[in-house]
Image 1 (cartoon, rainbow, N blue to C red):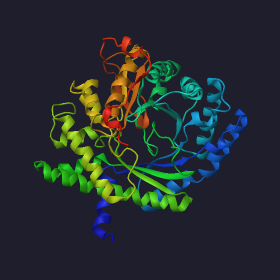
Image 2 (image 1 turned 135 degrees about the vertical axis):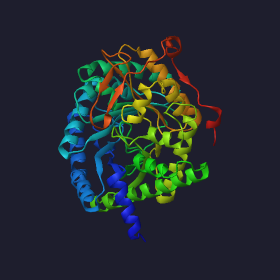
Image 3 (image 1 turned 120 degrees about the vertical axis):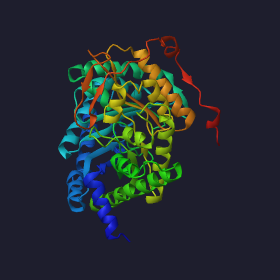
Image 4 (image 1 turned 60 degrees about the horizontal axis):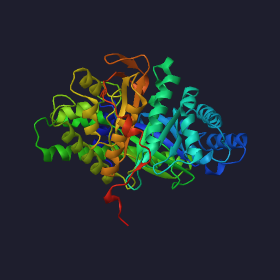
Length: 454
């Protein structure tokens, strides 16, 4: 039973501490839209999305008003499109036509983003997968709301280095195609390891083939709430610190559970999972980096940062799983640079480098996220960064990702403005030594020995 003090506490979390439901994401299977004819496929895709999701935005807004809970985004995730377009897409341009259809459907139902312009190629690429991947630069350049992801490896299969090499080239091409917008297309493209099938957060969201025909997933975010809770215990020992984070995560997750169940009931779509991820925004006070400072490091990137982040991530997960039987997606702490003012400040102060961020990804819930790098960075260097991050995910049996933005025309020290939740970012230096010979070997890095669990 919820008592009045808990109601007042939740209201305070919303009004003063930046608690929000970051997204209601409807997952939709498009497997039954596949057809040999491209136009028929596009028509089926448009009709299914606009039918199932026609009330998604209005329902989210109604719940937000009635419960006084901010719901920032309403989104859609779909079956990886390389699986849907395989029969009808013969050239990359055919996939671009599907991307335009998806963008039109997203606009017509009013969602912020649609994720799933994707391929899963962790062990190898089909012809369809490769065509979709090669279409990504054009697709992201001619659409507004489409997000794309490619899963290039997993703990069970190893790293598909052919796909890693190709994605370095694709990120460069995407940057060039969208250079008039500060290479914004790359902010909607992520390369993944061990991608979950039920992640509601962009740009890595897609609707996995193991999911139902349609599902409701909710992503909750509350770094400001955790920060406020820790500010009340500045000198507490680690036991008290951990208990405080767990209890706070529990309360945040219960808000998401309420919204998810209500959205599921009103839309007539089954409830999937709650993703409790401390996803920051550019707003002051809504920062994961600030939480790390509350734990005790002077700046994100200082010695002790990785340990503090590991503690935070683990306690968030422990608190969340007590609040809902269906916690999934990524659930933990995100460390995007451009979307977190504390991270930006740490970069500008010289405390945080890409190498330190890479170390932090070993213990957080995602990876190298929303990092702007010089526009002349080579495709091979980008592929090397992807390979490093993929290895961390593969060996540690966790999801990792690379969403990196080579901003054409920008150099270290410049700043790039993406706007909205994507924020702004200082252009960070990358290691100047080459890795071309490594990237160009081709083939697959085998799965680690501990992957054999049958």
